[in-house]
Length: 128
Image 1 (cartoon, rainbow, N blue to C red):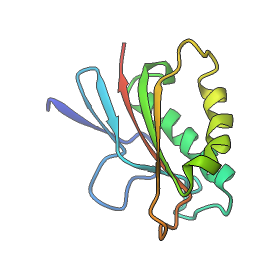
Image 2: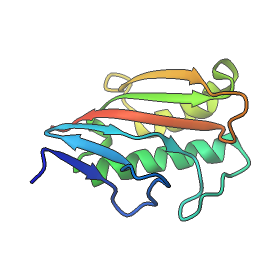
Image 3: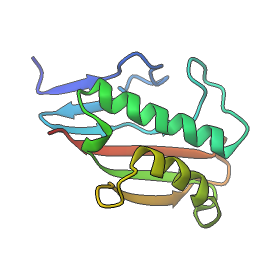
Image 4: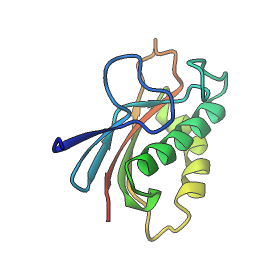
């Protein structure tokens, strides 16, 4: 068996020849996660819908790697305007990570102005 394992699960794969995540030992790192609707490559019109999809894909990918959201140690988000768009992230963040004493680290960066996506993310996890 290869040391590195591609993680895809049942959700749609990237258009390019890359997995949704990769695992070596107990470390999992995702590829970029977009907010398209499940089963399509269509982006919903609102930030809130795209954010909800991203969080669903985060859950799916960590579970496909054999972990849970409790194993996630850091999430990075990209949004058009981090200062104004954190509320949409925070709503889903608190749902996924309700314990304020056990949340992963988070960093939010600006997306390029010409991006069609309103949000993207990636995560790092250490499986227990």
